[in-house]
Every structure is written in structure tokens, then in C-alpha cells.
Amino acid sequence: MFSFDFMRHAFMAGTFIGLICGIIGVFVIARSMSFLTHTLSEIGFAGAAFGVFAGWAAINGMLLFTIVSSVIVGQMSVKESRRESAITAVSALFIGLGILFLSLSNQNASSATSILFGSVIGISLAEVWQIIMLSVVVLIVIFLFYRSLKFDSFDAVGARVNGVKSNLISVIFLVLLALSVSVAAQIVGSLLIFILLTLPAASAKYYVHSVAKMMALSVVFALVGTWCGLYLGYLTNWPVSFFIAALEVLIYCGALVHAKRA
Amino acid sequence: MDGETVSTIKENPTGDVIINEILTIKHLALSYGAKSVIKDLNFSLQKGSFTVILGENGVGKTTLVRSLLGQLTPKAGSINFFNQERDIKLGYVPQFRNLDEEYPLTIREFVALNLYHGWMPWLNATEKKRVDRAIKQTNLVAIQDRPLGQASGGEKQRAYLAQALIEHPNLLILDESTASLDVGMKYELLALVAQLQEQQQLSVLFVTHDLPLARQFADHFLLMEHDRYQTGTMDQLKVSRVGEAHV
Image 1 (spheres, rainbow over the protein chains, first blue to last red):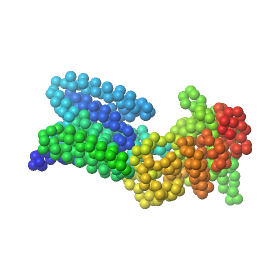
Image 2: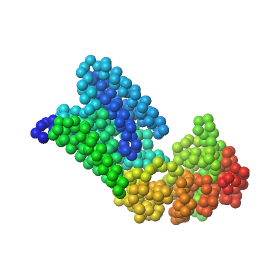
Image 3: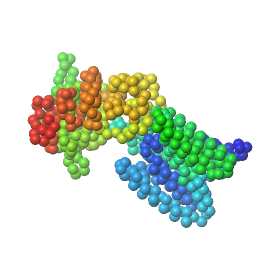
Image 4: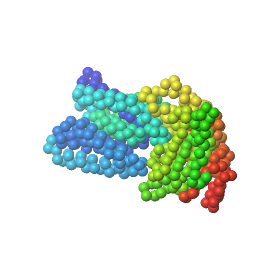
């Protein structure tokens, strides 16, 4: 299997994607942002369409759209009660723009539509490096803001009254989330990206009870799903995204059973 | 006491000025947009006192607390904190926290969240000792490794208190912290707060509707009614018809 370049690239990319999705996912779950993650993945597709229209690499269009839209959502949903409608409004606008750019584009739109389902088998070495660089940036920023991000995510009320700059932390986190969505879309596709950003972390919280341990276990769950998904995809020629989705759902169901027994 | 603040600034034998108040509020006015909530409030909080803010819903108790925390800018008047030994530090235990039964963090990790100033993700030895101290002070040692989501209402409140204590505050503000507890737990929590107040010369400001509970522990009161504020001991308060609801 590893004698093929495309499989080596897929495993390298998948490892870094599992790593950052597992870590970021812990904060996504703590901040109840699963819906935003799902929406960002759709916006990512719209961004890829814009990239095709503008003659850019699809990932650059995704980065632009997801970062801009997540910051707008963050500013519009300062009041928690407004969050869902703000996400809906922003995603409606960006998805609409995506459809517009796709129809205006004279070029072949297959690179944009491939973002919907993932194209891990076709990842080049240059793209692997891009994914590694973005992952390193995400990890460094999390390291630097770890304590404030942890406080704001796991006790928003306490963080606010004790002087944490919640608005700044929120914007930083949304940008990190947008980066992670754009990176992870390469492997599982926009439609299934929220799986790696939510289910591993949601499963981990039933087994361990500290943020560091949750991040470690969440990364393990994300990597197990990604590696096994790639291997099964290689064996069967079925879509990798299907296997990753099925495995993560299985892990989550196992976690729920564990929680019921505990 | 209505409308005036008694000064308690003294000189000791060496001539140093001693300020006995930890907080003075003068002619304070607070509003949300055009809606005035507090008008001309004068109030002082003695160092080491256990003071209760009483009042019906809508008289501005939480608004006042928000202004003390710096979350709301006064429309008029002033709020001044005094502390000679070190910077004033506020500990705050809020009324609501959105933590459900699946909340994953242990009580110990929850308490340590408030140590957010360091750059390193892990706690150093000094910080670990501070967590140990706060956990011990609030009698949470035996259950510190239990997930907070599985703790009882009283244990949760003690964890919130421990988190507020970890920064060694000299003024502790509790905003209706006993509202969701049964009678036994309410007394247990306030007895703990009173014990800490005595041991550490902590000043306590406790917002509540529950006067029978408050009068067991408090030495001073701020009774807030619409446009009328009284401060003093229980015997000094002039009780109006509105105030009778509380007193």
C-alpha cells in the first residue's frame, strides 16, 4: 500500500488532519459549535467554487470564505440567542455566492465539486506540505492561547467575569476553526468534515475528564477513523469518507454505551 | 444612612492613614440606554464585613454587581475600591452557569480554569498549590476528581466558590448563589463563606432575596427599593411596605 505515492501522501495528510481535528474538536464541543462547523463546511464548498472562478487553488478560496464568514458570525452572535440565526444568515449568503461563482466560472468546476466529497487519494506532495504548515500554525496558536481558550470554552460565564478577553478568544478560535475546516476538507470532503471536528471529541468526553486527556483521546479516535478509513478505502475501492464516517459514528455509539454503563 | 456615606478614615499612632472601607460608592447612577435603573446610590463596604444586598426583582441588584465588576459604566457618580496591602481583587460567584450533567471536567480542573494568566498550558508547582488550597478551603478534597456535571447542587456551588477563591480575592461577591439550593445546603454554603470571611479577613457582598438566611450571617445590609436605598445593620433599616416583603 505504501509503495504508492498517493497513499503515502494520503496517510501523511490524514495524520495531520486527525491531529488538528481531534484537538480543535474538544473546543468545538465545549463551545456547542457543531452547527457552525457543519455550516462552515458548506461555506467551504462555496469558497472552493470562488477559487475556481478566480483561478486560484480551491483551498485558498475555502480559506478566504471560511475565515471571513466565521469572523462575521462571531461578531453577529455576541448574544448567544442570536447565534443560530446569525449562522443561518451568513451561510445563506455565502452558499448563494458559491452557486453564483460556480455558474459564472468558465473553467471545469470538478475541483470545486470534489471538495464536497473529498479527494484524499489525489493529494499532491505540495498539498501535503500546505496541510502540514496550516496544522502547525493551528497548533502554535492553540498552545499560546491554551489557558484562556480552555477557560472561555469550558466556563464562558466564569471567564467573562474573571476578565478573559472573550471576544478576542472567540475570533481567534473561529479563525482556527475555519483553517481546520479548509484543511480537513481535502480528505473527507466538505459534506463530512464536521464528523472529524465533532464526533471524536464528543466521544472522548465520556471516557476522560480533563481537557488534555480529552484532546489526546479525541486525536486517537480521529486518527483511528482516518487511518482505518484510508486502509479500507484502499482495500475495497469504496469512498474513504464513507469509512471514516461509519467508524467515527461507531466510536461515538460505543462512547454512549460506555457512559450508560458508568 | 440614605444618601450619605459615613467616613471611616482614621490615623494610627504612627500617623499612617487607615482606610476601613474596601469599597465606597458615591451618587452612583446606572442605566441601560434611556432606562434608568439606579439613581443616586451611596454605599460603603467595611473591610472584613459580611454585607447583604436585598431587594425585589428589577431594583438593580445585578446591575449594581455588574458595575462593580466593571461590566457597566456608571452614568454618574463613582465607585472606588481601597486596599492598602495589595491590589484589590474581586472574586465573583455568578447566579447562573450553563453546565449540564454531561459537563466533563473534574471539579479540580474546573477550579483551576481561573488560573488563566500563564502562557504554559500546564500548571506549575505554585499554581498546583493554589488549586490544592482552594479545594481544601471549600471541603472538596474527597470529590475533587469527580466530574463536575455529576456533583450535587451544593458541591457545584462550592466548586464555583473555590474557583473564585483561587485568585485570593479581598472582596468576594456572591450573586444569588444559594437560589437553587435546598435549605440545608444554603446554610452549609453560607456558613463556609462566613468561616472564610473570618479566617481571611475577606469582605463579602452577598446578593439574595432570602432574608431569614442572610440575617444569620450578615452584619450589614443594603436594602434596595425603587429610588430608595438604605444601608446599616438590621436594626437600623427603616422598613417600608415594599421592604416588608424582604424583612
